[in-house]
Length: 461
Image (tube, rainbow, N blue to C red):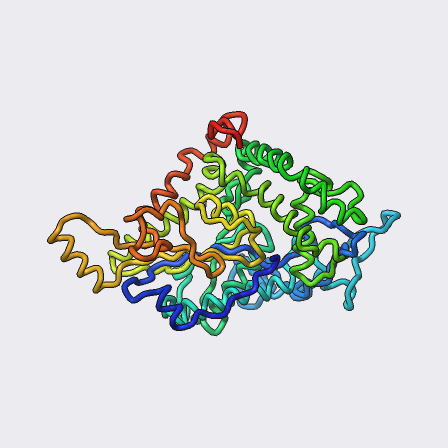
């Protein structure tokens, strides 16, 4: 599965089961993968995959803020800088021919103005992320009445993206689906938060963490040892016409790169030869890539700490803050939207022990829902607590991955989840799971550590 087929909205009976009256939703964080995009590198041209994709009509509708010279707008005071947000422009992609001469990548009907660059969010990606936002609105605004119908202040929502254009544009679309222009107060201005690449924790930051990069290479080698003998068989023979050297985890292209091109093509309706849509071929490519990219989180404590621990810690901290605000009269910032990547979602799910072993499709999402006991339940519990002694958990955390509630192994024991529903972790149990992965000194650990992955666990991986 490359693109996520959205499930129908929850039925009334499903809603009452998922959101019982005994619990009250108080905080929501949604971590989403960006929408459909072009491949990050041009591959498989000999299999009919176009080098340039005419699937980015937004490139004809860009708008920029520019600084104008003093005095260019009547009424401007003194030396005040004057900004204008009305520079409209379109973009063309330029390339070069066999002789090195510059040419326009003209593959569309309008002189190449809808041509995408590598790794760009496509029109289909914009549609799917907009649809995600609309689904969130139907659930959390219309069905549950949890989020307000209109946003009046920017403090009511937290919007965060990695510093990549496709994730930022995906977040624009998700936000617009959740709160379209008609659902924003006069003068409302959204603030989108991002970090520098060197400080980013919305994906496993191998570029800023030497130790994580070393671990990643070691697990890639282990994946090659496991999967190359398998890939040499059916899959390599099936695609030999297009890849004479066959397929390997560490081949040229790498399995992950090949899967990227195949998934990008399928997600955007680009026709592929039957060899690449063969179910067994696709399953082997996906399984090998999943092993390379995500097995480290399943098997190695330090991998989890350095690759996912900081992000999980941030998510947990916002939950704790929400519980404190609730006690003071209410949570103002009820929703946080994060726009990230497939490696983000896979890392989080694998680290928490609820990964399904499949590559996260485009526009996949994890909803982190924080509940408190409903007032009647809490007051009744308070009386029982006073009478019998002891303290009962009043807050619960649930993850829904692509609409499906997840059960975390760390919350499975009795007393660590709501009785009768193992998907509802007690907040204390969730904190315990997450805090075991939060690094005390991420940068220090990134620059030190054992030389191989097996040294961390004391066993063969």
